[in-house]
Image (cartoon, rainbow, N blue to C red; front, side, top):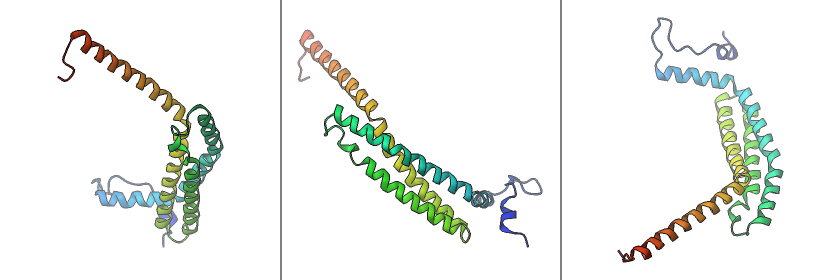
Length: 169
């Protein structure tokens, strides 16, 4: 009897023994097999990503504090909850990683589902952190765009006045 691990280590063929292309369903099954075989590596990657995102939180909180000094509370209000949201999401990702680890020996497909859930939560946490870290640039760009828009509108109004065009037209 062939063990599941031995089967998982086989390469994924794109053609069958007679050289015919495999049906998409068959390729999907083989891809799932490969995914299940790499579950431990995926779990390790998830845990590494969680740790990296968690390590970036203090910097994001410091940046948020700096933004609070530079900008009004109204301007950065949408960012205020980001650190806590990121922590909550990282907690969910960590919980999913724990579930995946517990399932690896008994149900690799469900373990992969838990890993996927963890990766999604970690990605959302990273997005919360990134929003804070990129806010200074975003806010500076917004001021430049607003200045350009005001200049354009002012020029349009000056043209209307200069050309004596009916402003209602």
